[in-house]
Length: 252
Image (cartoon, rainbow, N blue to C red; front, side, top):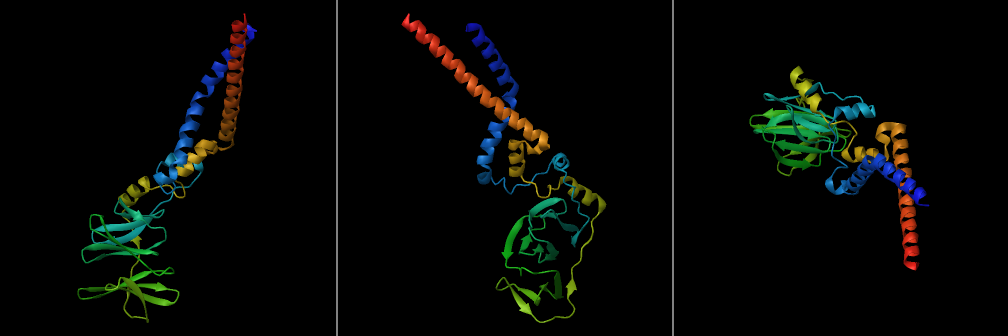
């Protein structure tokens, strides 16, 4: 009986050492998954391009943007950039960007953003018509009128009310168009851009389930789960054996 118990404990230790790294990974990833919402990781993008290759996600590239003075405003994977500096998330297409009264004004299809020339956020103005398609301006002296086209026609931004007002067709609107980015700037943006459709929470979930390595990873995690079950049973068996031997010694 003692030899059998010794053999069992030896394999119990070996099995524990074999899966200790997987147990550590599953424990840590499980704890982080429980708190990923409060940490904001369900929206936090991932930047590691080797993960994009692992997931088979083709790299997204930006090649055009809007010139704003000596700088450029561009958008890649829902992130706005002033030159190579990240600004804010723009979950809908960027319609245009321009210099406005010493600020940088950027219109997405849900908000108009105002930034300092160094990229510091000044204000977010919501209420851009949901079906806005393109952005144009008319300069009248020191006054700049901003327009967007919609399914209904035309809307103009009213600075006093901070809202968009439907307008009749207006002539001589300068419609903003994107232009090719300087090659070196485009390369810098593309090299640091987040991976489309991939968040930290998604990576954690796939790591915890093993799916990050495909079918092989799932089998590895399944094997680790079976090993933990065996460890629990063997530990219980060892404890029960010691308990029985201790009881016999107390009787004698």
